[in-house]
Length: 469
Image 1 (spheres, rainbow, N blue to C red):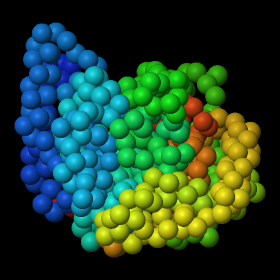
Image 2 (tube, rainbow, N blue to C red):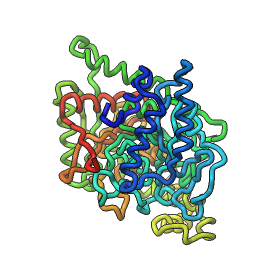
Image 3 (cartoon, helix red, strand yellow):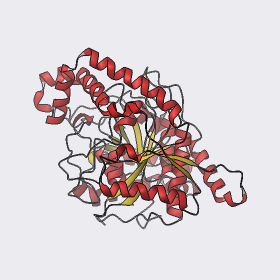
Image 4 (cartoon, one colour):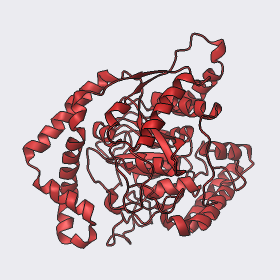
């Protein structure tokens, strides 16, 4: 526990379980950090202090009566401002929608509440969740971007203003800001989490995911929100279950590995060569170090094999852009015609591009996705792929950075976890991205937790205090 309170859901949940911390006390710690950092970081659109205090007080009363809903009981969580929260505005980064109050919770928010989470408020999104830069600043350097479009969620978690957050990803909007801000993210399999109550952008590419300060926290957040939703016909019937217990069991077995020679050596597939011409030199060096350390660290004993991604990846970014542009035009085209001034330049350009795409090109992009999906099914055979999370450390604040390293996995709808495991020469976070097979969040999170554990246990990665402190 840090001097001003726990920074992980795991630590806070244990304190609450033991009776050493109440939900109300935990919330006040987060609100104090909002008071300290928010004037500089600008992570929030709305902080619902009164509503959050009412939630925390009610959950504190439940504990006194002997009811604990689980590891999210009393945990403060932020919600990206394209996701509906009852009685709060869903502004979507729009000037005209800034006061548009939601009449009910999005399904994912409702499920967080049922699990005991305290909804602190709405975090900043880029306009309509695209690439135009937000007002939010990176807490590691206020002159740098936090990434986008889930900008506020990443910055808020990095500052401890909340212990977890919801975000969304169509291209790289979870992985990129989490990586730039030095927090962890999980983009689940497409359709794993309901998008009911979430502003659409590109309906076959949109994902709802989570951010937190360790891998185990990602598992705690994803378990209650995943699964079938009768209000979303695209939502999968497959729940995510037992992720937390699988992580705990895996780490326990790792600690006993010297006595259990039968345990399999964890395998990873290094695919950085696909990104080699795009990433900055220090990112390439960082990935080489990750490769070496996974093979050599005393507590790892991992097998890392290098491999070349299927040939279809050569056109994957172009196909992603085609599908995203056409679907964004379907969602936003009419509104753009009525309110052109409400759309910043980059999203306006994308929508207009989508309106010009021939139907044959759109169909070709979807067929290419189907073929690649088949290729990938046999490619990594449940071994997670090891890739850069971003092409560089956080760039200047007039951009949100490049989604190049994230687009392939959004296009294919496979799950990814990003882990901050390094530092740039300028003292900014660098992250690795693990990519799993469809529906394999449980094994992916377990492998990610092993990587996190090994790098911290052997001292290969040391977290640093925020310079804002």
